[in-house]
View 1: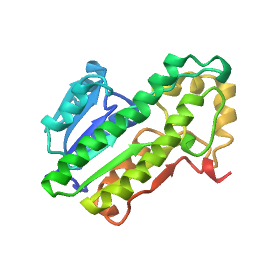
View 2 (view 1 turned 30 degrees about the vertical axis):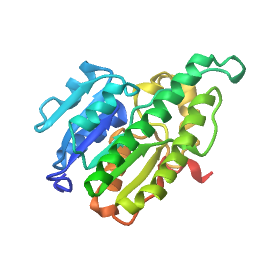
View 3 (view 1 turned 90 degrees about the vertical axis):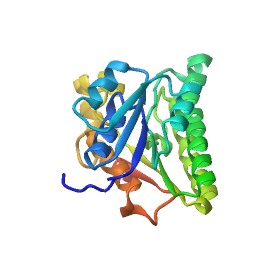
Length: 244
């Protein structure tokens, strides 16, 4: 990788302690950005940012006031990546209310709060900015035992479009990606089950799961000046899954 598309820019990345958030934070840093990562796992953040210059992190819950304060007080940031997310698997009729609310809080309410804080800062300063939300193929299609996750990610897609519509006049672009099954801890159990893994990969035209670096590349594209006329889009990064 030789491009330095983000030299002189700063990015705030949630969920940076693992998975797609980690890969996005590392790629942004590799392309020249000063990155601040947020995650509940201090150990995960330390691993993400090991050996990277001009990087810092905040170990806290993305739902907390401290997360919003970190975005505000450690800024200004040119880029916000909302990558933190959780999945609680339950059959619909047995879905605990607490897990339903937790999923919506992490996957939808937290990105809304952070995007609003980010946008207010840019509106008041009169500066452009860009937000990238990590949605999901489940923003478009349901999956068994994933009711809260599917609802939260489909709502995040519409939040992405609503933000793009209202923030365009302030020079703030808002886009999302919709990853398919990606090799992260969230689905490790599925991927380690040979029968289930093979059945799911058979439904993916490219025949394999994504590596975290692949959706991270799409995040960086949407955050970069290569995408200056793109806003309100949610880009599938799914190996063709949604073509069927």
